[in-house]
Amino acid sequence: MAPSTLSSRDQVEPQLRVALDAVPPFGVSAETLADLRPAVDAMALSAPDAPGVTTVERQVPRPDGTFIPVRVHTPAGDTARGALIFLHGGGMIMGSSVGYDAPSRHFAHTAGCVVVAVDYRLAPENPYPAGLEDCYTVLTWLHTAAAELRFPAGRIAVAGESGGGGLAAGLALLARDRAEVSLSAQFLQYPMLDDRTGTDTEPDPMPYAGEFVWTAQSNRFAWQSVLGEAHAGPDVPAYAAPARATEAAGVAPAYIVVGQLDLFVGEALRYARTLIGSGVPTELHLVPGAYHAFMSFAPEAETSRRASDRFLDAIVRHFREDEVPAS
Image 1 (tube, rainbow, N blue to C red):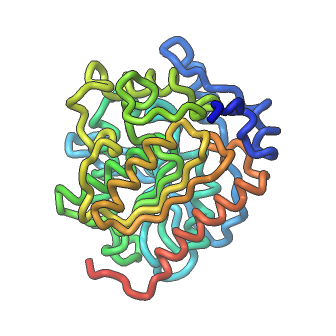
Image 2 (tube, rainbow, N blue to C red; image 1 turned 60 degrees about the horizontal axis):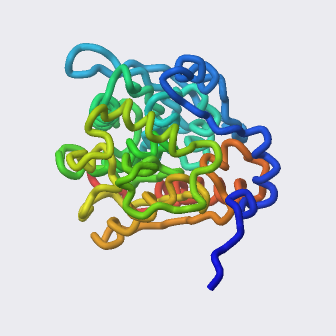
């Protein structure tokens, strides 16, 4: 059989292809990170109005006496159906919760849940496990604050995009193993799950993945920032890079969406395979012709709208289940 002559661009869904001209690769590096951070912080994602949702800034205490900034979005009504921790994208080196206010409020309104968006510490200033420990601290705080925030303490889920999706998956593993507070679900948008992707140690390279938006070069820099000298080596824990996990029994049920042309497609498939092989309820959506963060960079494309609707529907279904576990 003759080898394929298709390029990656040939495989991009036509409506998403139009957006590519306005979406250059980030090209993040030590030289560009300082300039990229404010630009990424200024990117505010859109979402439908969320009537009745209130937003409050809170400070969650760390064990050392410092604080984690969070934005708490509370739906209208006397009680909420549960709580959703939301972890922003940015490769664990950029981004903040503010740019996700509109979707966070939309999640809160539509699913009837409290949404807590976390400004976890970023690398390279704060390498692993700082960001993940911030997420875990927020999880335990949220469990204790359930009565104050008027939601069932036994229904706390986590969602994350890109680097935040990797942290969400790491949090699911960490919560299982520390066995202090349970997560009820993990919702992952094109999650960043494996430090080996784009390196010589990548388990199963995808030849058409990673040309657009977030490239192998950016990925290597981000993971080197997070892990330092351990990056792509044999001793990286699954909490840091969840696609390295060899088993996941007892981890929270998962919903994963990733594009066929996303640099992260291989690692998302590996993580899903581990979840499925461990008996974890897993819903995987592989979107043909889609690149990294397509829902954010081409929100009007039909492919993006369908994927966004399915992601929201999964969250709504979770929080509207009749049986709520005991705290």
